[in-house]
Length: 237
Ligand code: ATP
Image (cartoon, rainbow, N blue to C red):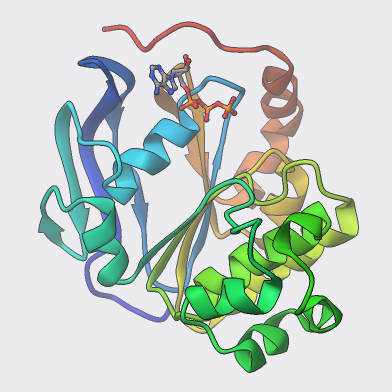
Protein backbone atom coordinates (compact mmCIF):
# COMPACT_ATOMS: atom_id res chain seq x y z
CA UNK A 1 0.00 0.00 0.00
CA UNK A 2 1.36 3.40 -0.96
CA UNK A 3 -0.61 5.49 1.47
CA UNK A 4 -2.44 5.29 4.76
CA UNK A 5 -3.86 8.84 4.60
CA UNK A 6 -7.37 9.81 3.49
CA UNK A 7 -8.70 8.43 0.20
CA UNK A 8 -7.97 10.50 -2.89
CA UNK A 9 -11.66 10.70 -3.46
CA UNK A 10 -14.56 9.57 -1.35
CA UNK A 11 -18.32 9.96 -1.55
CA UNK A 12 -20.65 10.02 1.40
CA UNK A 13 -24.36 9.36 0.82
CA UNK A 14 -23.93 10.86 -2.62
CA UNK A 15 -26.95 11.37 -4.84
CA UNK A 16 -26.47 12.80 -8.29
CA UNK A 17 -28.56 13.13 -11.42
CA UNK A 18 -30.17 15.59 -13.75
CA UNK A 19 -32.81 18.27 -13.26
CA UNK A 20 -32.89 17.55 -9.53
CA UNK A 21 -33.81 13.94 -10.16
CA UNK A 22 -31.29 11.41 -8.78
CA UNK A 23 -29.89 8.78 -11.09
CA UNK A 24 -27.48 7.44 -8.46
CA UNK A 25 -28.23 7.38 -4.76
CA UNK A 26 -26.56 6.91 -1.43
CA UNK A 27 -23.18 6.12 -2.94
CA UNK A 28 -20.22 5.38 -0.68
CA UNK A 29 -17.28 4.99 -3.02
CA UNK A 30 -13.62 5.61 -2.35
CA UNK A 31 -10.36 5.37 -4.24
CA UNK A 32 -6.97 5.37 -2.55
CA UNK A 33 -3.53 6.05 -3.95
CA UNK A 34 -2.04 3.00 -5.61
CA UNK A 35 -5.29 1.18 -6.26
CA UNK A 36 -7.28 0.40 -9.37
CA UNK A 37 -10.98 0.31 -8.65
CA UNK A 38 -13.48 -0.99 -11.20
CA UNK A 39 -17.00 0.42 -11.45
CA UNK A 40 -19.19 -2.13 -13.21
CA UNK A 41 -22.84 -2.32 -14.10
CA UNK A 42 -25.29 -2.54 -16.98
CA UNK A 43 -26.07 0.25 -19.44
CA UNK A 44 -27.98 2.97 -17.69
CA UNK A 45 -26.96 1.90 -14.18
CA UNK A 46 -25.46 5.33 -13.55
CA UNK A 47 -21.72 4.71 -14.01
CA UNK A 48 -21.03 7.80 -16.12
CA UNK A 49 -23.20 9.89 -13.83
CA UNK A 50 -21.12 8.67 -10.88
CA UNK A 51 -17.84 9.57 -12.62
CA UNK A 52 -19.20 12.98 -13.56
CA UNK A 53 -20.24 13.65 -9.96
CA UNK A 54 -16.84 12.51 -8.68
CA UNK A 55 -15.03 14.69 -11.19
CA UNK A 56 -16.96 17.82 -10.26
CA UNK A 57 -18.60 18.05 -13.70
CA UNK A 58 -21.96 17.37 -12.07
CA UNK A 59 -22.91 18.93 -8.73
CA UNK A 60 -24.30 16.49 -6.14
CA UNK A 61 -28.02 16.61 -5.39
CA UNK A 62 -27.32 15.32 -1.91
CA UNK A 63 -24.39 14.01 0.10
CA UNK A 64 -20.80 14.94 -0.54
CA UNK A 65 -17.66 14.27 -2.49
CA UNK A 66 -14.43 14.53 -0.52
CA UNK A 67 -11.27 15.21 -2.44
CA UNK A 68 -8.18 14.19 -0.45
CA UNK A 69 -10.15 14.33 2.79
CA UNK A 70 -11.75 17.72 2.20
CA UNK A 71 -15.44 18.10 1.40
CA UNK A 72 -16.09 20.51 -1.44
CA UNK A 73 -17.83 21.21 -4.68
CA UNK A 74 -14.90 22.23 -6.83
CA UNK A 75 -15.77 22.17 -10.52
CA UNK A 76 -13.91 19.82 -12.86
CA UNK A 77 -11.36 22.39 -14.08
CA UNK A 78 -10.27 23.11 -10.51
CA UNK A 79 -10.01 19.43 -9.60
CA UNK A 80 -8.03 18.92 -12.79
CA UNK A 81 -5.46 21.44 -11.55
CA UNK A 82 -5.35 19.57 -8.25
CA UNK A 83 -4.45 16.27 -9.91
CA UNK A 84 -7.67 14.72 -11.20
CA UNK A 85 -7.67 13.38 -14.76
CA UNK A 86 -10.87 12.42 -16.55
CA UNK A 87 -10.70 10.32 -19.69
CA UNK A 88 -13.97 9.99 -21.55
CA UNK A 89 -14.59 8.43 -24.89
CA UNK A 90 -11.84 9.20 -27.44
CA UNK A 91 -10.85 12.50 -25.89
CA UNK A 92 -8.60 13.74 -28.72
CA UNK A 93 -8.62 16.80 -30.94
CA UNK A 94 -9.33 15.26 -34.32
CA UNK A 95 -8.23 18.40 -36.19
CA UNK A 96 -4.70 18.20 -34.75
CA UNK A 97 -2.02 15.61 -35.34
CA UNK A 98 -0.80 13.32 -32.57
CA UNK A 99 2.22 15.48 -31.70
CA UNK A 100 0.05 18.59 -31.44
CA UNK A 101 -2.48 16.74 -29.30
CA UNK A 102 0.35 16.01 -26.88
CA UNK A 103 1.63 19.58 -27.07
CA UNK A 104 -1.82 21.03 -26.36
CA UNK A 105 -2.08 18.63 -23.42
CA UNK A 106 1.32 19.93 -22.22
CA UNK A 107 2.84 16.47 -22.48
CA UNK A 108 6.32 15.77 -23.83
CA UNK A 109 6.18 13.43 -26.83
CA UNK A 110 9.19 11.52 -25.44
CA UNK A 111 7.26 10.71 -22.26
CA UNK A 112 4.13 9.66 -24.14
CA UNK A 113 6.22 7.39 -26.35
CA UNK A 114 7.77 5.72 -23.33
CA UNK A 115 4.25 4.77 -22.32
CA UNK A 116 2.99 3.87 -25.81
CA UNK A 117 5.86 3.40 -28.31
CA UNK A 118 3.17 2.46 -30.85
CA UNK A 119 2.42 6.17 -31.26
CA UNK A 120 5.87 7.04 -32.62
CA UNK A 121 5.03 6.34 -36.25
CA UNK A 122 1.76 8.26 -35.83
CA UNK A 123 3.13 11.55 -34.48
CA UNK A 124 2.37 13.47 -37.66
CA UNK A 125 -0.94 11.74 -38.34
CA UNK A 126 -4.16 13.65 -37.69
CA UNK A 127 -5.74 12.28 -34.54
CA UNK A 128 -8.99 11.75 -36.46
CA UNK A 129 -7.14 9.27 -38.69
CA UNK A 130 -5.83 7.16 -35.81
CA UNK A 131 -7.40 3.80 -35.03
CA UNK A 132 -9.71 3.66 -32.02
CA UNK A 133 -6.97 1.99 -30.00
CA UNK A 134 -4.39 4.61 -30.97
CA UNK A 135 -6.82 7.38 -30.07
CA UNK A 136 -7.30 5.86 -26.64
CA UNK A 137 -3.54 5.46 -26.21
CA UNK A 138 -3.21 9.14 -27.04
CA UNK A 139 -5.99 10.11 -24.59
CA UNK A 140 -4.48 7.97 -21.87
CA UNK A 141 -0.95 9.21 -22.55
CA UNK A 142 -2.18 12.79 -22.28
CA UNK A 143 -3.80 11.99 -18.95
CA UNK A 144 -1.10 9.80 -17.39
CA UNK A 145 1.95 11.79 -18.50
CA UNK A 146 0.76 14.76 -16.48
CA UNK A 147 1.18 12.58 -13.39
CA UNK A 148 -2.34 12.91 -12.02
CA UNK A 149 -3.14 11.68 -8.53
CA UNK A 150 -6.47 10.22 -9.63
CA UNK A 151 -7.64 8.92 -12.98
CA UNK A 152 -11.33 8.58 -13.74
CA UNK A 153 -11.79 6.69 -16.99
CA UNK A 154 -15.08 6.01 -18.72
CA UNK A 155 -15.05 2.95 -20.98
CA UNK A 156 -11.45 3.31 -22.00
CA UNK A 157 -11.66 0.14 -24.02
CA UNK A 158 -15.06 0.55 -25.67
CA UNK A 159 -15.06 -1.22 -29.03
CA UNK A 160 -11.34 -2.04 -28.98
CA UNK A 161 -9.58 -5.30 -29.81
CA UNK A 162 -8.68 -7.49 -26.81
CA UNK A 163 -4.92 -6.97 -27.16
CA UNK A 164 -5.35 -3.19 -27.18
CA UNK A 165 -7.60 -3.42 -24.13
CA UNK A 166 -4.87 -5.38 -22.34
CA UNK A 167 -2.34 -2.74 -23.32
CA UNK A 168 -4.44 0.16 -21.97
CA UNK A 169 -5.33 -1.62 -18.75
CA UNK A 170 -1.72 -2.61 -18.18
CA UNK A 171 -0.66 1.04 -18.53
CA UNK A 172 -3.19 2.00 -15.86
CA UNK A 173 -2.06 -0.84 -13.58
CA UNK A 174 1.57 0.21 -13.90
CA UNK A 175 0.72 3.83 -13.15
CA UNK A 176 -1.20 2.65 -10.07
CA UNK A 177 1.82 0.63 -8.99
CA UNK A 178 3.67 3.96 -8.96
CA UNK A 179 0.97 5.58 -6.79
CA UNK A 180 -1.91 6.65 -9.05
CA UNK A 181 -5.46 5.97 -7.88
CA UNK A 182 -7.77 4.90 -10.71
CA UNK A 183 -11.50 4.38 -11.04
CA UNK A 184 -12.35 2.57 -14.26
CA UNK A 185 -15.78 2.11 -15.77
CA UNK A 186 -15.36 -0.97 -17.93
CA UNK A 187 -17.45 -3.34 -20.01
CA UNK A 188 -14.63 -5.88 -20.19
CA UNK A 189 -15.46 -7.35 -16.79
CA UNK A 190 -12.98 -10.21 -16.82
CA UNK A 191 -10.09 -8.14 -18.10
CA UNK A 192 -10.60 -5.36 -15.59
CA UNK A 193 -10.88 -7.85 -12.74
CA UNK A 194 -7.41 -9.08 -13.69
CA UNK A 195 -5.88 -5.69 -12.87
CA UNK A 196 -8.29 -4.24 -10.27
CA UNK A 197 -7.78 -4.21 -6.51
CA UNK A 198 -11.45 -3.61 -5.71
CA UNK A 199 -14.77 -3.53 -7.50
CA UNK A 200 -18.11 -1.77 -7.12
CA UNK A 201 -21.12 -3.07 -9.01
CA UNK A 202 -23.81 -0.49 -9.68
CA UNK A 203 -27.38 -1.50 -10.34
CA UNK A 204 -30.19 0.99 -10.84
CA UNK A 205 -28.18 3.78 -9.32
CA UNK A 206 -27.05 1.96 -6.21
CA UNK A 207 -23.99 -0.05 -5.29
CA UNK A 208 -25.30 -3.60 -4.97
CA UNK A 209 -22.04 -5.50 -4.72
CA UNK A 210 -18.54 -4.61 -3.66
CA UNK A 211 -15.38 -6.55 -2.94
CA UNK A 212 -12.09 -7.73 -4.30
CA UNK A 213 -11.90 -9.41 -7.72
CA UNK A 214 -11.40 -12.73 -5.91
CA UNK A 215 -14.61 -12.19 -3.95
CA UNK A 216 -16.53 -11.24 -7.07
CA UNK A 217 -15.35 -14.00 -9.36
CA UNK A 218 -18.12 -16.24 -8.03
CA UNK A 219 -20.66 -13.67 -9.22
CA UNK A 220 -19.21 -13.19 -12.68
CA UNK A 221 -22.05 -14.86 -14.51
CA UNK A 222 -24.63 -12.72 -12.69
CA UNK A 223 -22.68 -9.55 -13.36
CA UNK A 224 -22.19 -10.31 -17.03
CA UNK A 225 -25.77 -11.42 -17.62
CA UNK A 226 -27.04 -8.22 -16.00
CA UNK A 227 -25.07 -6.39 -18.70
CA UNK A 228 -27.38 -7.86 -21.29
CA UNK A 229 -30.35 -6.07 -19.79
CA UNK A 230 -30.59 -2.31 -20.39
CA UNK A 231 -31.55 -0.36 -17.31
CA UNK A 232 -34.05 2.34 -17.96
CA UNK A 233 -35.32 2.88 -14.43
CA UNK A 234 -34.16 5.78 -12.30
CA UNK A 235 -33.05 5.18 -8.75
CA UNK A 236 -36.05 5.43 -6.47
CA UNK A 237 -36.44 5.76 -2.72
P1 ATP B 1 -23.83 3.31 -20.11
O1 ATP B 1 -23.09 2.07 -19.76
O2 ATP B 1 -24.91 3.08 -21.11
O3 ATP B 1 -22.95 4.48 -20.47
P2 ATP B 1 -24.20 4.31 -17.43
O4 ATP B 1 -24.22 3.26 -16.38
O5 ATP B 1 -22.94 5.08 -17.61
O6 ATP B 1 -24.67 3.70 -18.81
P3 ATP B 1 -25.47 6.88 -17.20
O7 ATP B 1 -24.91 7.35 -18.50
O8 ATP B 1 -24.92 7.45 -15.94
O9 ATP B 1 -25.39 5.29 -17.09
O10 ATP B 1 -27.04 7.09 -17.27
C1 ATP B 1 -27.90 6.72 -16.20
C2 ATP B 1 -29.28 7.33 -16.46
O11 ATP B 1 -29.17 8.73 -16.48
C3 ATP B 1 -29.90 6.92 -17.78
O12 ATP B 1 -31.27 6.65 -17.55
C4 ATP B 1 -29.72 8.13 -18.65
O13 ATP B 1 -30.76 8.26 -19.58
C5 ATP B 1 -29.78 9.26 -17.65
N1 ATP B 1 -28.98 10.41 -18.11
C6 ATP B 1 -27.68 10.39 -18.47
N2 ATP B 1 -27.27 11.62 -18.86
C7 ATP B 1 -28.34 12.44 -18.74
C8 ATP B 1 -28.58 13.82 -18.98
N3 ATP B 1 -27.59 14.63 -19.40
N4 ATP B 1 -29.81 14.31 -18.74
C9 ATP B 1 -30.79 13.51 -18.29
N5 ATP B 1 -30.66 12.19 -18.04
C10 ATP B 1 -29.46 11.65 -18.27
